[in-house]
Amino acid sequence: MAFRNVTPLAALDEGKTLSVTVEGKDICLARLEGEVYAFANNCSHRDFPLVDGELDAGDCSITCEWHGARFDIKTGAPLSTPATRPIAVYPCRVENGQILVDPD
Ligand code: FES
Image 1 (spheres, rainbow, N blue to C red):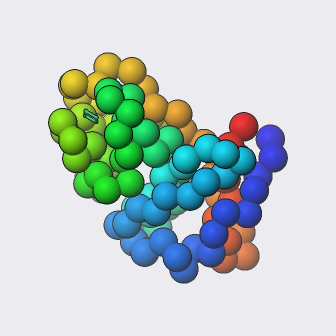
Image 2 (tube, rainbow, N blue to C red):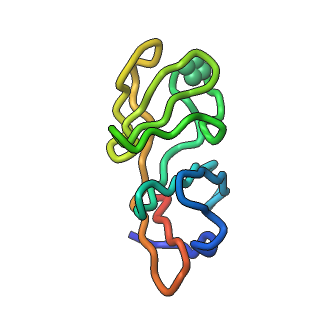
């Protein structure tokens, strides 16, 4: 495990997403109800960025804006078709006002 300092928490508003590149990986950060999540910024259906998708605090999911697949952003599991494969999720934490992600 090797956490990298990614961005200040202040750069990610509640209910919003932000794309970052960590060790060459395109990662989407999301802040929902005070928690920060990190997952692949890439829908497993057709390789489309998830950063512009819609977050849902009710089931902690994001909906891809292209064809509407939903993913659990805690586990990466697909919650609806057309996606059938999970997306990668990354360990993430907040320390001293900074978001840290382990991209390995
Ligand atoms: S590319 Fe995301 S649902 Fe098709």
